[in-house]
Length: 536
Image 1 (cartoon, helix red, strand yellow):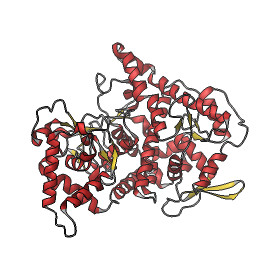
Image 2: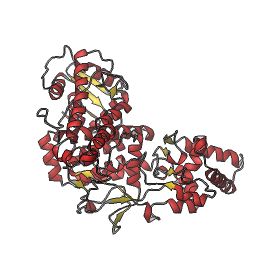
Image 3: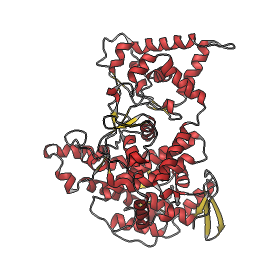
């Protein structure tokens, strides 16, 4: 059984009863969108946090090195902001008509009147300015357009627009006629849409960054990853400091006027609502992050490195957030198959990572590679299926509910979650029907270039090897042979023609490949900051 981090007792009768939760932690969930993974991760990072009852608290995005070195035997809790006033102002007009309660309408009218009374305009009317502000914040809408306004989320362009999910309990609120009374019928802790995946990502980072440098370097050397990371990136102390600074810098890029307006609308116009729904001021609103398996620190350390490279990328903020969203999804997919591989029946001995995903060309011109790629998808499903049924996990699942819990594990937490994420980011096609296989698109390719290049450029062979080492992605004949051996037990050495010509073409069309000769090419990361030596 995986050892939890933090070292907290597991609730095997409720939140930790499902075998997938006991394998992967609390929890990755199929209903959570890729953007909501990133939003929830940043929500934990930007909220006040504490270990246990509150004697050890911190407001920084990541814990200090001293706190990371402590024995984490209490739950990590955080106090997220609901930002109900800001959501009501931005999303109410675009929400479904049947979700617009009369108390919400009345409160919005109150917000509008207070805002107009505080405006000083010369060339326009307060009504037009108010509409402009509403459109401004509606333009930052991220996810949940079909939901009630309070369950929708902003794109996390700045800290003052990161908010927890709030669920309006419409049935219970029948007969409510006053906004102050209505506040009691918003639930902020149900985890329906922000369903703990981001919390798990945050815990994974803490679990990885608390390792010693010697422990990290030993694992990197044993796994053949030493050449993939810079000397500084192998130091968890440096990595933690730089990642915290990079996250803070990214969240501060949005013009301060937008942040100030968001804070003013949410807090200054109606302080009562903000005070009642502010997690830090209301002890009932502290939320527990649950736990992650301690043994997942290996893939989580790679996630920390990739996250730092992504945050530092010289890209527009929206492009960078899109890149980090894709990274979160791809990392969850990596976690699902890597952790399952630790418990599934071995399908062959592979160096890190313990699996291979055969990537076929998007057009599917090479039929042999397509078949190997399809076998890889099936092998991932089998690995996750078998990992969930490891005897130690299977035997501790209550016999009376075993069938129901395993059906739920497969459908919401296991191999179907892997496929759902893969299809959402365009890595698994087709979205419907048989013959599922792995491919790349421009979005994933940009992520690979940014997250795998430790400097401005690396050789093409190094890029290909880094894709295998970080994510298990293989393109050439040698890697595809390993993938087929892992998936089917049959080694294949010939695939008819060069299997990665399409990848070279994609890189060239993206302006990310420069040929030096017929046998040597460089992958260039145009978003890199600074100049570093070429890695051979």
